[in-house]
Image (cartoon, rainbow, N blue to C red):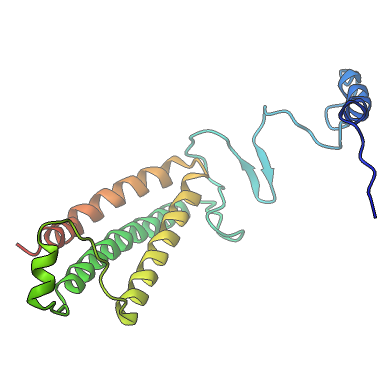
Length: 193
């Protein structure tokens, strides 16, 4: 069974016939929300069920943080949200340190010895070999990486609110967390010296 094919000029003519009337339509006299039922202006913030999301850096109350019910409406609630974000940043840096220490420990794990003939054969060339798959190590590595990615996405969602207090808290918390836990990562990278 053969399907009929339209020649390219005919296809172009059909597309042009469909698009030209839309391009020539005069929408200047229509109400703002009349075109496709949507108001496409960018002058105001995005209206949400709990208020308006401001598309600029601000310190106003009422931004949704992660869930619909988490909307700090008072300064105390905003402070509590910032404390929670600060603790999450510390957890992220502690997790990074734990992951680095675990990687260093797994590198020091006993490796299978090669016989002398294999050592002599490989001596003159660069030979990269992945360590063997160890379910306990690799499952833990994957779980820690997934948790770090989850925390990173959580931080991104907080930053996307454009709430200045959240952003300052995240940056400060990551800095304090690195100050507290960064030395463990550095020690793991140096081989524990």
